[in-house]
Amino acid sequence: MATPFTLDASVFVAAYRTREAAGPISRELLRLARASDLPLIEPAILPVEIAAALAHAGENPAAAVAYAESVMTFPGLALQTLDERMARRTIAVAAECHLRGADALYVAAAAQYGARLVTLDAEQLERAPASVRACKPDAAASLLQTEKNSSCGRKPGPAHSSAD
Image (cartoon, rainbow, N blue to C red):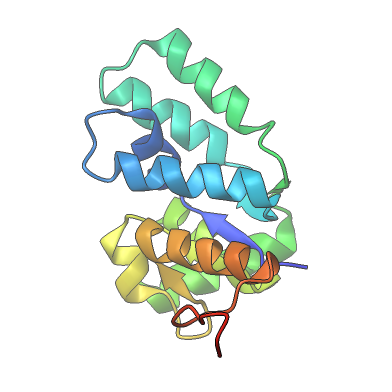
């Protein structure tokens, strides 16, 4: 089974907004994730954050809600509720890593499930504990592309001629 990913809401928001600098790579990452049926472990706040960020940025509120709800049907997506145990874990992450509440939820979810955190948020990238493998969407897309190529029987490195 592939290593699960936790995608911060910033990745989904960038994928939606066509004028975002990180939009193309975020869309490519989501395409690769969908094609590989990648497990996505997300805090349940994800769709709320997506809709709020899009509406706050001036997107049509109904379109923001529709997109956030469509994300909830993403293949391989598992929304993790905030129970008391997760709340305590997130409190510790927020305090120890100096992260805002929602940002700490993504880091805590990634930590709990051994997922790779993918984010455009500089604070999450810089402050996530070393035990959480955090990266930007371009690095995550490269990882998925490499996994896709290796699962198709392709060998990394230079091509070999039939004379070898």
